[in-house]
Image (tube, rainbow, N blue to C red; front, side):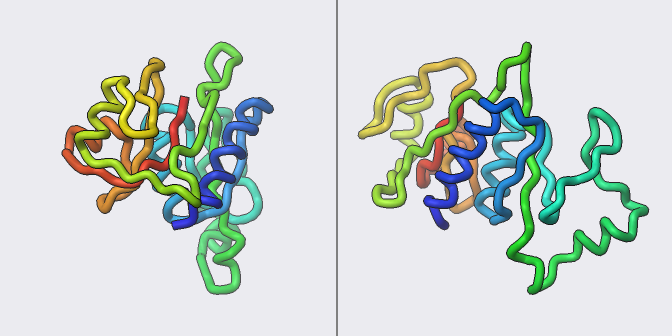
Length: 172
C-alpha cells in the first residue's frame, strides 16, 4: 500500500473540485478503488468508473456508463499485461448550489508516520474528541477513512463493527 500515491489522489481530488471539473481520473489501484467507492457511498462523488486512458463517452447528461453493444468498448475493457499500467479510474465530481461537495481532502497517516487506531480510539474520534495526535470529527459531513483487514471503511462503520486499522484520510 503506497501512501505517497494516495496523497497524490487526495490533492488531485481537492484541486479538481476547486477547479470545478465535472470528470477527472486517477491511477487505478485496488486501494484507490476501495477508497473512491467509499467516497461515492458517502456522497462525495457521483460516479466511479474503471476504464482506459480515454474518458468514458457521455451517453446522456446523467449517465457515464459505456454502451454494452460497442465492440470497441469491450476491447478497451479487456485488461492485459500490455495495458494494465494505463488503466484509470474516472470520477464524476458532485456540486451543490455551485459549490463542490468535496471541499477538503487531507491525509491523516503520512508515508513516514503511519497512524494505527483501535476501536476505542476510533470511537473517541467519531464523537469529536481527540485521540492521540488526531483531532476528532467535529464538522457536519466530515468523514475519516480507515484501511482495515476487511477493506477501506468509514470510521463510523469501523466503530459499529468494532474493528480498528490504519487511518488514511479525512474528507470534508
